[in-house]
Length: 349
Image 1 (cartoon, rainbow, N blue to C red):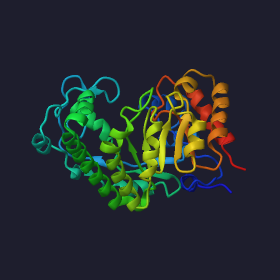
Image 2: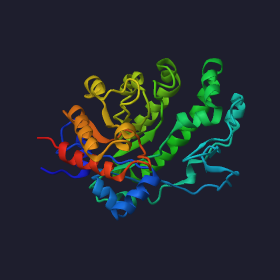
Image 3: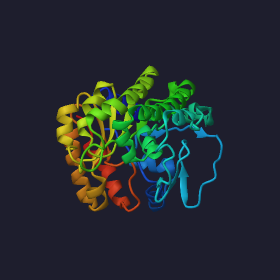
């Protein structure tokens, strides 16, 4: 029996086998524009062509408009201006040397600056046919790095742990309040609370398990509990090789991890599936670096089938690229080949 996208995804989160493996498409704005142009489709038409089983809704920022500094491309809610490609890199670390008092006195953003009034209506335009992602992205680890500087953040975890705790607490207080407003307004129209924090590098976690458990896990637990209190599944985007941290993530009830990068240390899909596949939904694992960018459509098709053969048994797998944003240099025909292979080889008997 053919399921709706929403039914398919929710069955997957229950670790049951639906009619086929759900498909996920995360894309950079540049690739998305290129794909629409080459395929002659609008936004929704492209999602349908790729077989994307997910849709996303956002709150709208209505707070003070801070002018960007020369060279800045983006400003975070926490007053960090960034420069460079994409969202760029921080131009300053305003809390690098801050005392506890200065941290508390910092100009933290107001959750009321996020307008949630239109979210429910937007989510319901999909008529409950797709799995709807909602809630604030909540990248508290990245924001702590921006505010303190990465090396300084790690050093202060040892030398001034109370200061680090205070910074992260303020950040997560904001994100949790925004998401609570979203869920109060539209929780019955949302299926998955989707958050993002990159705890991994190409060669392993960015911080050890002890520090992760001390400084990050309590806040992840808080966000997971918030989503569950509204009967939502909770999925986190996390790049890199973070396999040693997965048991802690399972302990706090995190439902899903996106996007598995098999080229990173410790992220072999077969090992992850065997070790954690009954307790964690994995999303991704089709290598966007070595396969999607450099391969041919036939190579992509073959490699996609190999990943599906490993990951799909027993449910608990969402198929897609191994990075959240398919890059502009990725050939459109390769992405089409990946999604067509998911449709063909992702079906359950």
